[in-house]
Structure formats: C-alpha cells, structure tokens
Length: 74
Image (cartoon, rainbow, N blue to C red; front, side):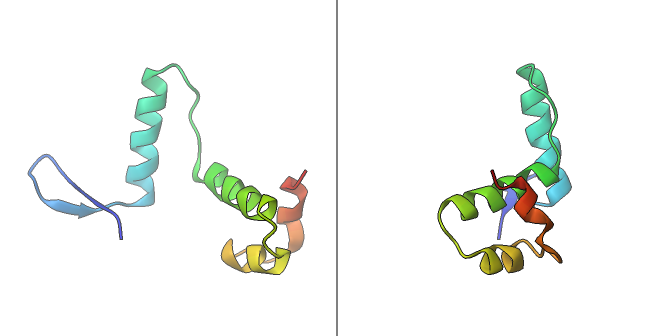
C-alpha cells in the first residue's frame, strides 16, 4: 500500500521499521524524543474511541486480545 524510492531509484515497500526509523531521524534533528510503534497503536485507539467507535470494533481493529486498551481511554 505504501512505498518509496530508495537511493537506487527502486520502488521499495515501506515497512514499519523504515517508517519509524525515518520519523525518529526527523524528530531527533528537531530535538524531539524518539517514539515507538506502540505510540501509534495507542494514538489510533484513542482517535477511534474519541470518534465514538464502538469499543468492540476498536478492539478488533487494534487486534487487542483483552480490554486492556480501555486503560488508555481517559
């Protein structure tokens, strides 16, 4: 679904590691702290909950196996 061109001008699939590495490079240069993929998972969960999406749908979307994601909901 997402791709980019590398130094050799080849089209490469964007992986989670490549995505997070690039973001962390940019943010480090700006003096910001590193983040993990978990931050995006929690952020996505929070966005869905704030939009009023049913908690069972959020649970399935985030592949949460328990209701622990509700701890992030404030």
